[in-house]
Every structure is written in C-alpha cells, then in structure tokens.
Amino acid sequence: MARFGRGFGLVFAAYGELMLKYQSLELTMYQFLIMRVKQKTTLDQWNRKVEGWYGTTLGRLYGSVKAQGHLTHGLAEELDGAVEMRNYLAHRFLIEWAIVVPSIEARDAALEYLAMISDRLAALEEALADQLRTQGVDAEAELGNLDEETRREIEALQPARWPLGPPGAH
Image 1: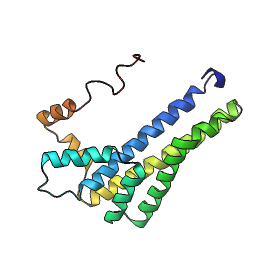
Image 2: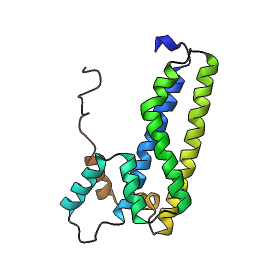
Image 3: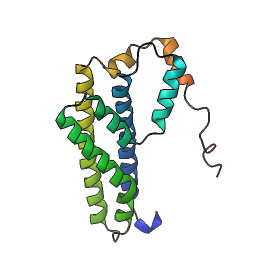
Image 4: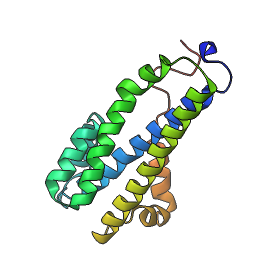
C-alpha cells in the first residue's frame, strides 16, 4: 500500500465495507429462497440447503429468487444492476483503480464512486426488505423476538476458528 501514499487506505476500507454489504445482499436472497422451503423440512434438510447456498454466487442466488416470481419488475432490474456491479467490483475495480496514477483526485474519485454504489445498494436493500414485509417476512422484527436459548444456539454456530487459522499464523 505504500505505493499509493497517504489516505489511500480509505479506498480499500470503503471497498471492503461495500463488499460486506454485497454479502448482506446474499443473506437477503436467502430470505426469499426460504419462502419456497416446505414446512415439513427436517433440520438436516434445512442445513444441507443453507450450506448449498453458501457455495452459490450472488448471481445464481438472484436467479433462483427471480424464478420464484416474488420480485417486482423494478426490483428485478435493480438486482440485475447490483449483480453486474458486484462482479465489476470483485473482478475489475481494484485492478483498474490501481493502474491509475496515484493522486488525491484519483483517491477522491474512487471514494465518490464507491459511496454512490453504497447508497444505491442501501436503497435496494430497503426496497427488498419492504418487498419481504409485503410477503409476511420481517427479519429485523423476527431477530428482535428471539428468546435467549435461540440466541445462544445461533451464537454457538459461529466458527470457533478462522478457516486459515488464527490471524497472523501465516
């Protein structure tokens, strides 16, 4: 990062925050997919289904949600754009941005661009939450109503170690 000079860490931080928001969008796709799971599904079947979603790209998750018919045309178009943008960010943004001659102007332009995408993604997430609420799903309300035992069970699902070992082990 020394090549970029002071202040360029802000771009990497904004990029990381935006990619986290895209991971949150994947979780929103899960909420739509859950609506298709049959009520008599066993816990093991649920776990296998969710584990399968973990290995699925945002584009494929979205394709499955789109096929369900739960999205308005406008939301489907916004999600098309969001998937395209996520792929651009994941595969090209940093490379293209890194080859620009480092300058305060380049840094500020990158930050402005990432902020614009972040705002648009936040609006999309809110519209998707509204769509889910019209279908009887309010994840925030449901999380707020969890009993202590369920909260402990969810906390127990968190990984006990990082996939590559503890930080600094490599």
